[in-house]
Image (cartoon, rainbow, N blue to C red; front, side):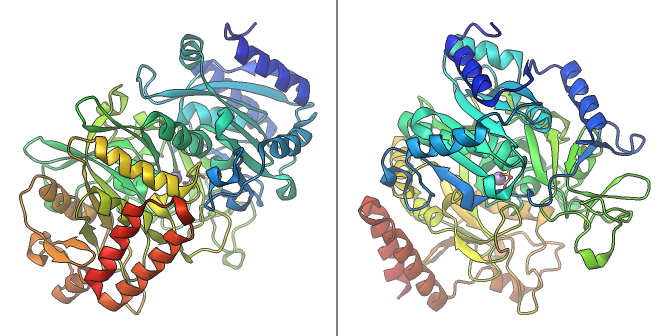
Length: 580
Ligand code: SAT
Ligand code: MN
């Protein structure tokens, strides 16, 4: 017996009988274990040592070239009733899905070691935290889970105490794209993932558990599991406001969460609580609170440099696992816009030539423990989480969406989130740069019907004593020549300040049909090379374009049928009326 939890022991035994591994290793989460796994993967070639003088504790993993991003078309939510998964998910009946998956898993771990990975999403003593166990045949997954979650003995002890856990079964199989599926069974709190070793498909604590399964659990238990960063903004007077911000994958969540205040903002500090996922609860006083269920970052590497994200740049100089970056002649990791060095080998290990495309894969990633982040918030370990002052939605939109606007109230805020759209990125295997609806940045991650999800959002607001204000931002507006209108990165602090001033009731806003916008004078642009007419463009609302957008949002909501809350439709019609 490796655990006193009989259900867990029986599941592990059953899986071993099905998959027939040579060995079973229960992960304890220790440093010794981590170093042992690294050593083993260096020997097998699954990890390559990077330059240990410049990058101590850093390694490179090159994934299979067909396995570099999430596969949304192969990701399913398997509920008994199809409508419970909703039009936003691919669906299979649970029995059929199990049958298909179990066939794939049969004997798939022969000649391999099976790792049993107990983990806890959230501070180990938090009432908001939830545990899971991932079984995998990938040591790469095991070391990444150690960096990304509270993994090992403490998590197992909590599972044995609480008795409940999410079951995640994973095998890389033969990494065959034709034999690749990520299946979720929310009613059984279980996940089966086969044929991919890539982050979001394989590190099951992350998108599979902490978003898809957790969103389902959250609805039943009255909380929210969201694709949000959590950031604390401390002003020179020492007051900190916490914001929870939802942006789609590869739209700058990590950069915003770790923002370094520009020189013009002496005395301001930014504290990272989380960079990807937030679990939100209304506490017994009616205050919305958030924890970050994760303990590490799986961030996009390209574009990271000393100017765009100094904190991340410094953080990934040690104790980091890189996936699919290029390397320099002296074996340092290299990626586009690193601003120093040059690539010798590309992400596939070939001699670098520009004719082969980018040196680093556009979705190349770093995995690193959160405690190495210079802006890591001490409150990230607070079992009761942090109080949330504002919810921020945002996307990557060349056009239309202004730099920032505020919803009139919670209900309107839910409409703003539900109507979100963003250009697709390299984080998923599909065409990049296409605008698609991505409600609350949860399109790939909501484990149930969006119509029910919006109703749940509306209901949660009712339970808050004073629901947080809701904003929408867009850092990505471009002019006709494709130049960004707003400098972004550290300068985004100016927009965060406007939002906080609004939360504190310190400033008025300009009423427009889509919501409340800053008076141009209220957005501090001192020292920025942003001309008045650029600022005007950034803060303008094009009525006819917005009429079209709102009409499309209406059609989108209707595509979810009867289950869409009437309140949401009423809010959409109200905005449309204001626009005409
Ligand atoms: O690949 S992950 O899902 O882990 C990261 C992301 O796409 O947001
Ligand atoms: Mn993400």
